[in-house]
Image (cartoon, each protein chain N blue to C red):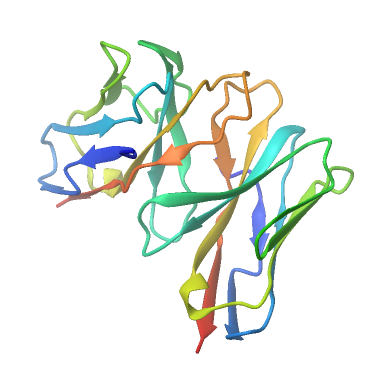
Length: 117
Length: 112
């Protein structure tokens, strides 16, 4: 079956612009996670959705970052007034149940490489 | 924030040799997982070991977990050039909502 997909695969934008990154999780997965990975580092957690609600947004670096999952499937990560330091690969993952249920094996998408000039 | 450290940061071996990567973490966990990443993009789940397990096998992979030392190791036996990738350990911490905390990774290079 289809895995997690993310669009676009690459995004180049100018400092100060607004960007949206999209994630399509595996069908039927209730949990969805966003991570950010800088060069030479491991992924860092941003936000976790259980269904439509953001169950944990403690990883969002500041209020320029926002994410939604209005129908409990596709999610969009939104970054306002982008800064050069936002340049990274943004990874999305989904799991069947998430939270404190189950073993929480996460399936990752290919990521969106964001470059802010 | 990063949970812990993988060791070594980089490892270069010949095809057929075994590769051992270590991971240390800081807090109590529900489970620990190992992931593989090619070319800095999507991660592939390799194996999950629960906090009450000490060793697990999957094909050429062997994972150990020592919760008293807060450490884990990943052994890849009879390595192949196709195993060249970065390997990350990730912990699912007690009390968390299930988000994973990753280390910085070990970059493995297997030479044919």
